[in-house]
Amino acid sequence: MNARTLPVEDDVLSEQLMSIRVLVIDDSALMRAILVEVINSAADMEVVGAAPDPLVAREMIKRTEPDVITLDVEMPKMKGLQSLDRLMRLSPTPVVMISSLAGRGSTTALRALELGTVNVVAKLGIDMAKGLAEYADEVRDKIRMAHGSRRKIPAPAFKPLPIDPRTSAGRLIAIGASTGGTEAIKTVLSQMPENAPGIVMVQHMPETFTPSFARRLDGLCRIRVKEAENCERILPGHAYLAPGHSHLLVRRRGTDYLCELSSGVPVNRHRPSVDVLFQSVAEHAGSRAVAVLLTGMGKDGAKGTLALFAAGGYTIAQSEASCVVYGMPREAVALGGVHESAALGEIAARLVASLSRREPAAVRV
Image (cartoon, rainbow, N blue to C red; front, side, top):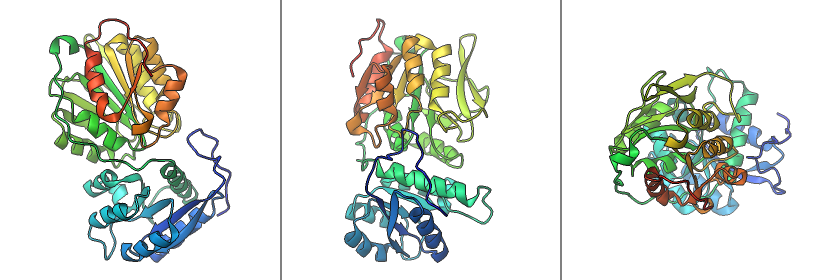
C-alpha cells in the first residue's frame, strides 16, 4: 500500500507536521501485520508498537506514549472490558476499537464506547464485501478522528426534567451527532420525561450498531427509543434513531409527523446525514422544532441547523469545552445558525426551556 494524499475535507487535521503515533493491540499476528502496513503507509501516522495482548501493551504504552491506540476487546489474557477500563486509567489515550464485535453491533462494543473508545471499525474478514483499500481508508480516517478528539469525561446521572404538555404539544425535537455522540445522546435523552415531544435523531455509526444502540438507550431512558421505520408515526414520549443504512427525513400528514427513510446518496460523506434530517424538519416543522447539534467531526448538520434557524426553529449547539470533537457544532456556529451553545449537561434543560418560548429568541453563542 502506498502513502496517499490526505482527504481535503475539513474534518481531517491535515495541517499536523508530526506523525500520529499509534499502538496496535491485537492477538492475531495477521491482523497486527495488516494494521501496521495500513497505518505506516499513511504519511501522517506511524506504528510505535504492536502488542499481542494488553499485558504486553502496558509496558509499550509507558515506553512509547502513543497518541492513539487500536484495540480488539476480545483477546486472550483480557477479561472483557475490564482491561479496556484499566488501559484508559493507565493512559487516557483515544482508542479505536477494531474488532469483530463492531460488525455485530454488540452490547460489549457499545459499552466500549462508554468507557472511552472514540471510534469503532469492524475487523477485516474473509467474507467482507469491502476491499482492502477501502478498509484501509476507514481505519486511517478513524485514527485521525480519534487523534483530534478529547478524552471523554463520564457524564453524571441526571433526573428527568419536567415538561409542560401545554407548551410541548405539536412540537418536534431533532438531534444530530457523530464522533463522541453515543454518550452525548444518552446524556440528553436520559433527562427527557415520558411526555417529551417526539424526537428524531441521526448518529453517524455503522448499520450493524444502530439497532443495538437504540435498544440500549431504550433500556436506560424513560422515553421509548427505537430505530425509525418508514412511514412510522412520530409519537410523544418516543425517540426515533436513523438506521445506519438510510437517511431519516420527517414528513407531515395532517397534524402528524411521520418518519421517512431514504437510500439517497450520502451527504457530507454520510448516510444517514444530519443535514438531510434537519432540512426536512425545517421544511415540515419550522418554528415548532428544536434542533440540537452535538459533538462530531466535520460539518454535517451545519447547513441544516441554519435552515431550521431561518425557519423559526430553535437551535442549540454543544459547547466546545464539552465536545469530544468540536467540529459540527463549530461549523453551525460559524454559519450563524445557532441560537445558543451549551455544555452537554445543560443541553436538555435548555431544550426544555425552549419548548415554552413564544417570542423570537436572541442569539447567545
